[in-house]
Amino acid sequence: MEKRKLGRSPLEVVPFTLGGNVFGWTIDEPASFNVLDAFTGEGFNFIDTADVYSNWKPGNKGGESETIIGNWLKKRGRRNDVLIATKGGGDMGEGKNLRKEYILRAAEASLKRLQTDHIDLYQSHWDDVNTPVEETLEAYQQLISQGKVRVIGASNFSAPRLTQALDAAGNSLPRYESFQPRYNLYDRAEYEKEYEQICIGRQVGVIPYYGLASGFLTGKYRSEADLSKSARGGGVKSYLTERGLRILDALDAAAKKYNVQPATIALAWLMARPGITAPIASATSVEQLQDLVKAARIQLDEETISELDKASS
Image 1: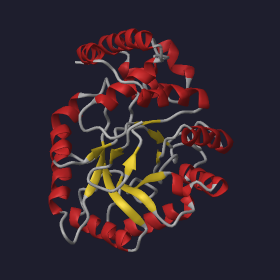
Image 2: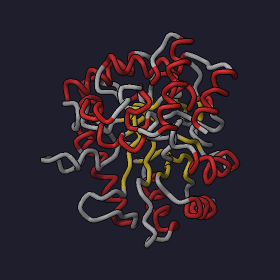
Image 3: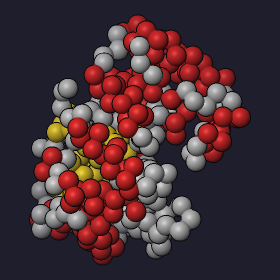
């Protein structure tokens, strides 16, 4: 499997990112350990999480995913084998906040939960338009100079604010080397229209989230009656459109052609897109994970990509 650079940074990732949002939400620590063991056992190295995961679950307060990953890193002794990406600035009780003082506190809390002395990729989870981009970058510069963060990235910024932050970087301020947009076979328009040329032109690595459209692109949701199949089903209803079902038909045809599952094809399509570094997808079992990692081992032909493009246009 090829490795891809994360922007202009020295970080190299195998082109599939394991999403940690399900750890402590839909799967417990032992099941999470099984998924992490299988993921790294297959030769993959990039794990993405955030401090807010999963404060939306009743009884949780945030930090559950980072805590599980930290326990796994300590128990398995795998810190030097993986790249850990996490995010700060999301609402942990103080609103979305990218002020310097807040970011420094949030990073320290993440380091403690992850039981590590450094974060490979630390990302602004949501923009805070009330904070100058320079102030946030100053916080990251301090963390980088202290050796606590290696590289920084952004997520959920508007295109103008992302451009502003990239323009603000220079000799004294670090640069966002990655960007996390919502991007998949269904959700194409916003990224391709507003962000794709920025990221390609500025050499910003792209690690799309919702690579499987909340599970819709796995093919297990074909009607509203299927929405009760998982805790994430509620986020799928908006995809049950004529276009969505057309995309599933194209995925089914490609999956049959390559003898894999639709989820594998959906991720392989993302990996084949220009500028994409490593799409994010989560798995709640080792069986699910096997379908995802296969995406990095197949190469879709031009005809298949064309059919998927046509169905999702």
